Amino acid sequence: MKIRVGFGFDVHQLKDQHPFVVGGVTLDHHKGAFGHSDADVLLHAICDALLGAANLRDIGFHFKNTDDRWKGISSLILLKETVKLLAEKGWQIGNIDAMLCLEAPKINPHIPAMQQNIAEAIGISTEDISIKATTNEQMGFIGREEGVVSYAVCLIEKP
Image (cartoon, rainbow, N blue to C red):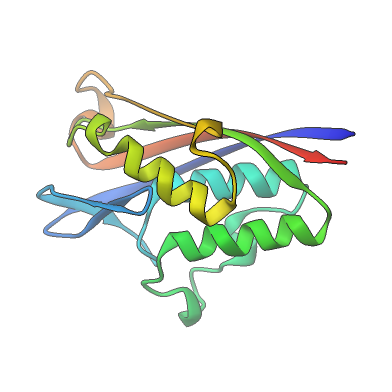
């Protein structure tokens, strides 16, 4: 069996009165992430981790922010498309470990729903999806609530 690990990172600007979608869950907050798609920073980091592990470049290569097909699209669709790209190369997903870094809102109550959304999109158990969150202790652009960051690592396997 061949195994690989991948690392993903994403960052999005936060804007007032904009939807805030994280892990396929719309959070109730006065600010939201801004981007070409729904700007789901968590799913974008996961897509990049998966694509990187399989040596399939990055999310921007496959889902260009200049392509109207992806304008406003749910990042769950981008994640499903990413999984198809891996499957075409014979890769299966073992697990995902992700971290969100933002000051507000609190993420913990939403983690089970995020895990469920990701599990359904990928086709693995929620037990294989770890999501954590931390603040930036009010420092920098994250601390000023100007942006949100996510990191992700994954394990993929080829029997």
